Image (tube, rainbow, N blue to C red):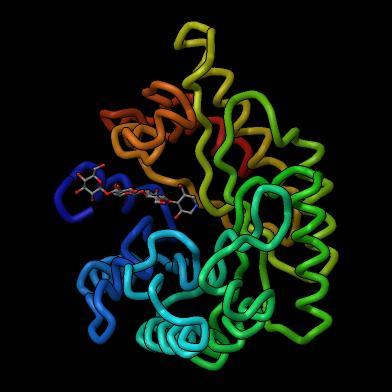
Amino acid sequence: LTSNAEYRATVEAEFSQITPENEMKWESLAPTRDSFKWTQADVLVSFAEENGMTVHGHTLVWHSQLPSWVTTLSTDEVEGAMNEHIDAVVSRYRGRIRSWDVVNEALADTGALRVSPFSAALGEEFIDKAFAAARSADPDAILFYNDYGIEHLGPKSDALFALVKRLLERGVPIQGVGFQMHIASTGNPSASSFRDNLARFAALGLHTSITEMDVRIGKSTADTKTALSNQAERYYEIIRVCRLQPKCGTITFWGVDDGHSWLDLPSMEGVFGKGPHQGLLFDTHFDPKPAYDRARDALD
Ligand code: G3I
């Protein structure tokens, strides 16, 4: 955003809300225990304000990208550190960040509570405490739980649905569920499964956002033109589901252009295979792809 003029111009022209990919994670903001590094996060929030955009904050409590000092805390120190972190970050941006991913990826792929410093210290109740801390630091921010692999009906989304119901019954101030949507041109979720799944969370009165969308074409056997056209239809069918669900209010893409995407990080090759995965709406020259046109069509 700060060093690439085309990137910046595309964000300014095309988007109405931004999310920090890494800049507000715990390890970015608090690499050491007693000091914060706010500069990059501040730059993003100011950029949004200068351009009349809202900001979705990502993310307060996550098992990954933690500074090493958090991973070496004793279990009885974790709650205090978590509460202090949430209070410091949410208070700093109170009134300037519209919504927050308060808890990210608390469930393992099986749907069981994921092992993390937070669950080890507090069990499921770490989620209750995290939301309470965020609410007390900003009474008006919209508070989300965010996860992947929960887009379709299945064991993990069932486990999350049960968890969210328990949270609501306990009076936890959760207001939304973020469906990350890191997907491929084929496979889960089908549009109908995503639609039915969103509907049950919406029926609980929750916002249901798409929070990290990309559609990889990496393993496609089709020629590139056909692969990009299949990808475009995939963008259409998923975004259309959100468009038709009244409680689905925002769609975030996990990057802008195919030249800057986590899918092509060397560390992801073992997971997704060799790229380029070309998962986003703009190509490496910032030209809109077929996916861009179909994403727009879906919003009509
Ligand atoms: O900044 C260094 C750079 O100096 C170094 O040369 C390079 C070598 O690979 O690494 C760079 O850091 C990488 C950083 O992304 C910035 O690109 C880290 O290694 C890499 O681990 C980090 O990955 C991030 C990943 O979260 C970490 O889990 C991705 O950018 C980010 O897109 C991804 O985002 C997550 C969401 O937060 C939660 N949902 C899933 C999503 C995708 O994994």
